[in-house]
Length: 130
Image (cartoon, rainbow, N blue to C red; front, side, top):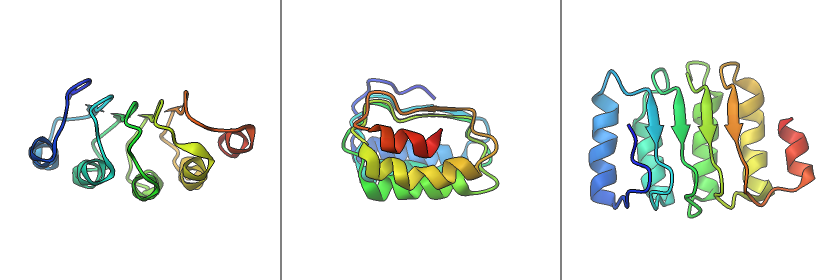
């Protein structure tokens, strides 16, 4: 499902979340630059079945908060998580949110690509995930 550059308000997000939760065939979610806020992003993440989604791009959504990163970290940590590609490019994450994700990333054996480029991350955080 490619929604890149679409402005998603809560009405759209609720409809998308419902569709994701019942679909048997959605394996890719491109939500890049969709004006997602924490509430919307959490609704989508909670609706996706971790066993199905392999590709998740939430880049260029800088309004995502620490609460969201904790939720997605829990999803990534889950042993049934099928994510192979995750992008949070240009989300203004900072070191704190990378630290939240780091343990989950190390625990997940399926994740092959993690894009954290163009974020406010120092060498201290990059060493946590390398």
